[in-house]
Length: 117
Image (cartoon, rainbow, N blue to C red):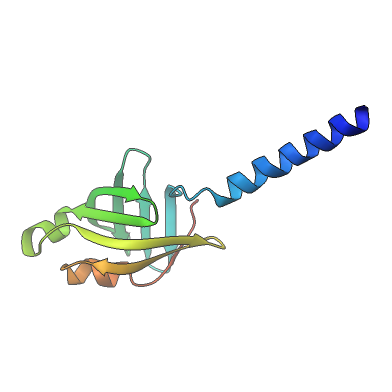
C-alpha cells in the first residue's frame, strides 16, 4: 500500500513540475545588456535606461506570447503602441517585431536582454 501511495505522490510531483515548466507567464524584473537596462514591474509599467540615462517610461500588457508597449518616447513622434512576440529562454529575453511604427523602440528592443535580476 505504501508503495502505491509513494508512486502516486511521485507522479503528482512530476505533473506539477511539468505544468510549472510550461507556464508562459512573462518574467518581470531587471534585464541588462551592455549599456542598457530595462525593468518590467508587476504592475504593468516599465522603465528603460541607456548608458545610465533615463530614456523612457511606459506601460506594457501581455497576452500569451505577445507583449504590447506604450511609452512617452514614442507617443509624440509615432503612433503607439508597439507589439512584439516575446520569448524567455536560458536567461535571455528576446522580442520579435509584430508591428511598431516607432523606429527608436524597434532599435532598442532588437537585441536580447539578460535577466531578470
